[in-house]
Amino acid sequence: MAGLLAAVFVLLAAGSALAVWPQPQHLSQSPEGGCGLSADRFRFAYAECSAVSPGCEVLDQAFRRYWELLFPGRGIGESKDSPCDVLNVNVTQPGCDGYPSLDSSENYQLTISDELMLLTADTVWGALRGLETFSQLAWKDNGMLYINKTKVVDFPRFRHRGLLLDTSRHYLPLEAILKTLDAMAYTKLNVFHWHIVDDPSFPYQSTAFPDLSRKGAYNPFTHVYTAVDVKMVLEYARLRGIRVIPEFDTPGHTLSWGPGVPGLLTPCYVGSKASGSYGPVNPILNTTYKFMSEFFAEISSVFPDVYVHLGGDEVDFTCWRSNAEIQTFMRKKGFGQDYAKLESFYIQRLLDIVSSYGKDCVVWQEVFDNAVKVKPDTIIHVWKQDSGRYPNETARVTKAGYQALLSAPWYLNYISYGQDWIGIYLVEPLEFEGSVQQKDLVIGGEACMWGEYVDVTNLSPRLWPRAGAVAERLWSNRTVRNLQDAYRRLADFRCMLLRRGIRAQPLFTGYCEHEYDSV
Ligand SMILES: *[C@@H]1O[C@H](CO)[C@@H](O)[C@H](O)[C@H]1NC(C)=O
Ligand SMILES: *[C@@H]1O[C@H](CO)[C@@H](O)[C@H](O)[C@H]1NC(C)=O
Ligand SMILES: *[C@@H]1O[C@H](CO)[C@@H](O)[C@H](O)[C@H]1NC(C)=O
Ligand SMILES: *[C@@H]1O[C@H](CO)[C@@H](O)[C@H](O)[C@H]1NC(C)=O
Image 1 (cartoon, protein in one colour):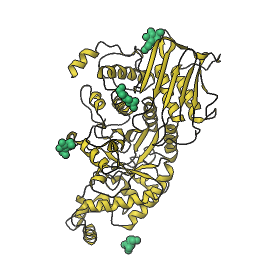
Image 2 (tube, helix red, strand yellow):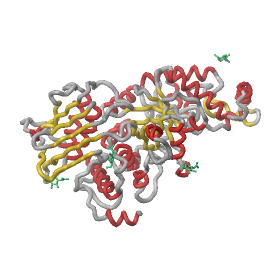
Image 3 (cartoon, rainbow, N blue to C red):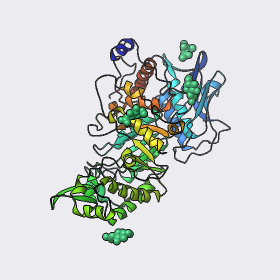
Image 4 (cartoon, protein in one colour):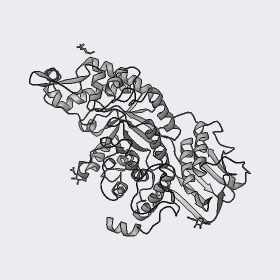
């Protein structure tokens, strides 16, 4: 496969042909007619009948961003209002101040003709997707910008198209997160899954429990996300139509919580002696649940999305097993030696707490595997590669009536020599044995970038353009899987990322007209 691709693709010069990434559902173009776009005259405008009007922050700012991307460094001229001078944007549903949600429409239609340039969308979020497509359709020749006569009718295949960043194993500066959000908008990804804390460090600065980051961050001043930082991420994401789902993973993966909250973690024993090390959150103490109530009250109000990711993966039972008080509790509860029951006991209480704040939950697949009773609308996050048998897990999850979110084949922190975007790209999320109703329960997927070996030095090239392969799989029609066409468009898209200042690695040999500007 690799040899064949190499032979075919080496001849293609990247950056010439027109490409939209991810591929729209319907796109037709005509070689005749179209518009020249001139910085002296072009502008974005609210259509007269639009339900949103100037002052709508989401679109006002998007107009400015896309202007800058189309005409870098140019000032806005005076529009003559001839058809090729204005992209009219018509949003049919009112609303600018809200946050996008799982149910937000992202549909849009784009018409470019000699008489009219019109972008129509149900919501401002759909308009953002359409503006991105518009910007990708514009092509340059001799310093002039053109857009062909075009008709696009577009909508996402899956509602949840996410990207996970891990800011615990390595701290990622705010700038790196914001830049990632920019690139997500370019690929129409719409969920930033912020795996904000984990064993190694606790960079989230809590208002109610400041000791968590004071004692759990790598550095309590330089390696933390303050309330202001978090607000900035939330607003930056919102303006790009991106939801932010925070993950506070418990009861495992919590070592960094320990120093800030004495008594929260289970003391481990060797024989009858405390070993001095700590295991998962201690599930037998009332103080644990009191803490979780107060902590998640804060999280629920800081993060506006209705979903919170509660983790629940990879709980190591060794420490619980070593602790005599936990053993006594197990006997009292009639759990026998089944520590998954103790985990369920904890998770159920946590789910009740978080639900009481009006939140819905996402959990990693072990919570489902261990038969924890969860609310019917809980999302189960399928992550275990399981030698390629993850489709069976998706089948089990959806058969039980739960919504499934797929990440198993999309761990982008794994790297290898060669074009591994191809394997990422060819994944078909609905390829499992199940009914139509089961397939409808797959809400989408997420690319994951775990941080063991990733910090700000290598984040961007490892993510891009590979996360783009996931983005197209989740946005475009399932029949869009032609590798030659995908290669051409993705190589082109990658060149566009370089032009836009994103450090994206190459797919293979070749060059870009505008290489990455390192100064
Ligand atoms: C766009 O228009 C140009 C100039 O008319 C033409 O050469 C080119 O083939 C068109 N592209 C597409 C995809 O139709
Ligand atoms: C913990 O709470 C339960 C239920 O509220 C109560 O029955 C129990 O006595 C409490 N345990 C301790 C040690 O306070
Ligand atoms: C996975 O599902 C397929 C199709 O239903 C089945 O043939 C296979 O035995 C399953 N594998 C495992 C390990 O359960
Ligand atoms: C996806 O493409 C196929 C083949 O072109 C088409 O029959 C189908 O209607 C498309 N699906 C959607 C949702 O447009």
